[in-house]
Image (cartoon, rainbow, N blue to C red; front, side, top):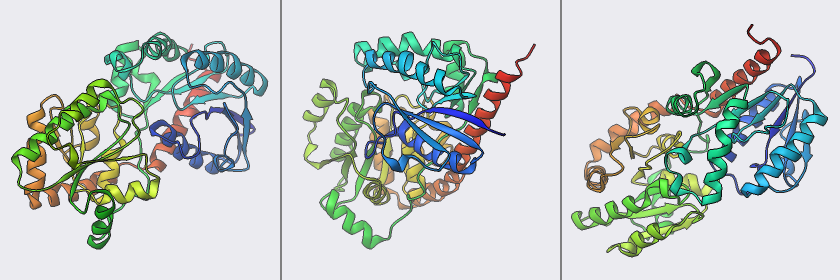
Length: 384
């Protein structure tokens, strides 16, 4: 490739505020930009970027407002600011790691659509946000030259919901930060002293959002505490950005809520420590496009309880306990099993290490790059 230019939507690269899609953007782009110095990458920001996100000399930052964190501002930024920037840059491709596109541009686009949770559970989102998603994302899907997504489940879902041919969708999967690794027993004891009064704990990591199924997780944990003689705590990591009345009511109704420890958002080093020190991870969402904490736990030598729906069986394979996320008793029973059975924990840990080898951000970056090349080539050489 000679003198190629690629523009990228990097509005979610915000220092100390990286979440799922932000981490995907960070981990893939820091590899792709360094590995392809022959390409000029224009990173499109909606605010002044942290210089650390300009990963290589072939990355140029372009800043234009308004900061897009609201449906009206989404529209203004993508349809006006992004369109104007793309017209000026004239790139061979516009890559959007969060799936949002400019409908007005003539630039060929690759949209990364992580999942379509808003199509299945619209009530979990504020009214205007879900209206925006459900109106625009079908149009983004049809506009895109190609679509990348993070699981075969999501690829099939995009195909069925929007009628996009599977030949236009590339599965790139997610990776996990290489900092996730086991810690020794002495370190575990110190970390547990900090986060769970020195007690072993089940761990939840993620945004405190209705689809993460916290209502049933709290009820299942209460049931576990009633049935078990062991004092195993529940540590919850994540911001209360989507904390709803139903989640709050479920928590307040807990008999053992004093055993639940909320940590808020943690930096990557602390998060790795907290993950590696858990007795088990409880990740029983009722909808996920991938579920990165599953792989992070596998890398950390921590057994996982996860849901038997959407992408989670695909990601976990046989390395986790799979449960019906709507069955509180089943979640509690899995907690009882892992708490009581050291041999089961050891078996799942061994399988988890093996499964984790199938996922890395380097693999993700390589697959995304191949999807980008396909999109450019298909635009230049459309099928007759």
